[in-house]
Amino acid sequence: AHHVIFRAHVKNNIAFVLRELRRFREAHQHLEQARRLFMRARDRVRTSQVDESRAQLFIAEGKYKEAEKIARNAAHSFERAGRQCLLAEALTTQGIALARLRETEHAQYIFQKAIEVAHEAGSLNSAGIAALTMIEEIDTLSPEVQSVAYTQAREWLADRQSPDTKPRLKA
Image 1 (cartoon, rainbow, N blue to C red):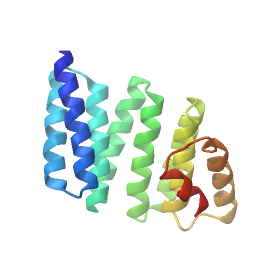
Image 2 (spheres, helix red, strand yellow):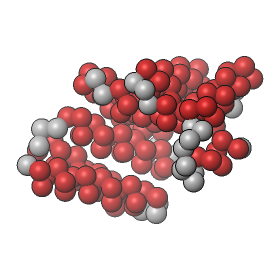
Image 3 (cartoon, one colour):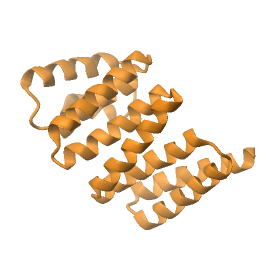
Image 4 (cartoon, one colour):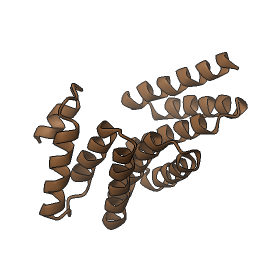
């Protein structure tokens, strides 16, 4: 069973690279293969992780309705399984999809839920990413909400050395 799970992880990782290369059809194929392998291993949490990856892929393709639905379902699965960090990530993905669908009030609620869940789970990195992403994705946030979210993101991501996060904090 371990080799099946390993193969599924590799497929999921390849799909990530293909998404970055904008080779969407191939990425979908790898995600479908990963999903089948995790389902064969009867691993619901990892299957939902693949679904969250699919939601990110749909966002990259501009298919926000599909992304929102899949991210919502993945979030529900993580919530049932008690996987708070994965829940926060799926909620952040769902928030992005909602913001791009111009459902800004719902998106703000989902982002704030992601921040809260991540913070309560002790994942300050995920909380900071959710706060920063909310600022980037919702251009109608009040100045007060922007200020609080930015302050939190800076505090929670202060020690993060990621080359993609630092420019986002300076923007």
